[in-house]
Length: 461
Image (cartoon, rainbow, N blue to C red):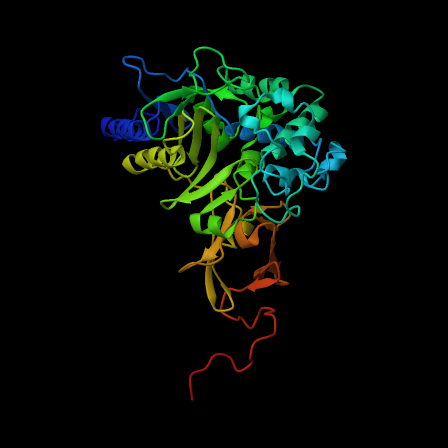
């Protein structure tokens, strides 16, 4: 039996290799390189190439396009955690005069600020950044296309603005802040703003012929925080582990969890497809699995980073072609192959270190009206409340240290759970955001809203 700390089984490795081989061949990519992360460590690297006898390894750079946005989002979250800004601050408070100042920092991160998808012509991805030296050149004369906060509309200029915000509050160039606050602490030594050898060249593949055309490699200038970076599967594997677990040298586990939480209203088609967006991270539901990460593309390059936090598996895929292989589907498949072939082995169950009698008294069965719920006390110091059968509202709660508890998720996120005691000290009922939970259905000894019929339960006469 393998554990998550051991190498992948031969059958799993072959399945991964087969999957990227099919993707490279059918997608006609000049080269494609991939990595899988499990338990926070890279456990597999694979590559396919059209060049005989020379396959890229985990140290070869590719351009990663919009995965750059996730790096920029981490820098903004660091500013928030240091108290230099609040995510609900309007942009105007910190970066005045943009024409988009009513949008909040959170809305920019979640692509709900109402900004255009692209900068004014000519197309920024295939022209020099020197054509757009100022923010006004990136945003144009009318930055807002939609009401602020009303819809998710992916915006590259929005992340240019966030990069400028980082520069304003740090008093240093975005590239310098990025290197000092993310790349160096996480050991991402092969991630850079400019390509550093060995790196792949970017190609366009003719749609109707097996022929290649080199793509130009432009410096994006002001647009760099939206898509400039070059990286490797080795570095992105380490970045994926960070996005799943956090690292207090860069950003806490709680803050990266916040980035992975949906923050944008979804279009109807996105609801059907199971897609959403957090704070600098894409979120999707695929094959019953919740996946987070980001995709990226620039002329000549495709990139994808996909993470299943529940399975503790991530995948990175990079290719040097403008179009061809569907890397989002490929990344999800690599995660699925490992998660299904070698399911995560859970940590051993361990009991509470100490048992608090006042908390233990809350454990067991409760009723909201006639709905039966169970409350469980777990070794992590939390309590969990959920229906005994079927679906319904469930949540975990964290102690406030004063006998009350605060909801962490779902319908009860942020809501207060308060045990109410009788004069003799025993628990009468639970008050959860005005809902009364009792030990018996419609307990006459508890203050059930609206009261309880004094004749009690009865049959049909």
